[in-house]
Image (cartoon, rainbow, N blue to C red):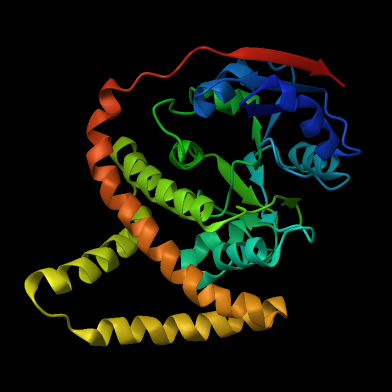
Length: 309
């Protein structure tokens, strides 16, 4: 049976989360109020009764039958420890929000991780690159065996956890048809903060659990260094920038065609650049914040609301 665990800023969000779950009826829903999502989720799992834990965010919108599909898959595949799928942009989002979603779903933005935001391929064994925490099922026994999320990390706590799952020999499964809907940021300040924090989180994750496959995520940092160092040293070779602009233009045209919206294509040209620069700046900033990891303490002030369904 499935227990849902949702970290919230306030328990007053519980009714909205239940509404977004629609027709799905898990064993119970654990709402954990606090200021440290990693600690909140760990605390929720400890109190959960289900043998499968489903992590969602407070704004995850679930299609009918998603939990039943997960239960059937886990029952038929005992070797699977984690099961997840993409988060898609709902039709109700604005054009600007959809442009953010289209960029995240673009290979030029995040490579393999773009499959967290679009349906691609078939059900398959995967890794931390394709699984997103707002739509992630985990066997409780495995979560407990691995001591859950590292409470010093947020975001990227699920990426570090999933690396440990793979290291322990368990299987992580991505199902492109096991999707949810989730609205993207409403404006550029929100988008910029999101990308910056993702970059910071990636660097901090690397200090906790280094993985060679994560090195590709530091490419935007070198792009930022290139952009900043040119004026500083009194000149810039414009060839790399021209090559970047050309790839960006092609990717943006493709994004516009795929979304059947020329405005999204135009916005994507700006959004790809903003994402790469802010994510790269975040990864560089993460080298500073990572020095505080060993002394970082989780805020353990939480409130739990358990709702049996």
